[in-house]
Image (cartoon, rainbow, N blue to C red; front, side, top):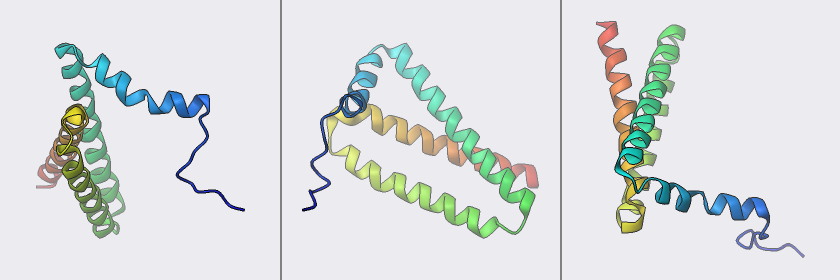
Length: 116
């Protein structure tokens, strides 16, 4: 008979992947490390925002699809943010999500000013 998907096997890979958020939280206790991690996340969001704006501008026909994709990413981030806000131990993930959203919107805004 089929087993439920909620009971995953405790493999080494599962154990390593489940400890990654704890290790990042422990690593980011140092304020300089936290700032550098958030700066990398901000620049990653900026890169993705710039790429989406550039690629959709190059093809020209995909502007509505790119707008829908960006809207879906931002709405998904807002829904995840509501969940993360309830748990104080997830503050780093909340800050990472917020800085990614800021970088994404800044990249799109800069691409919009290039078109003017």
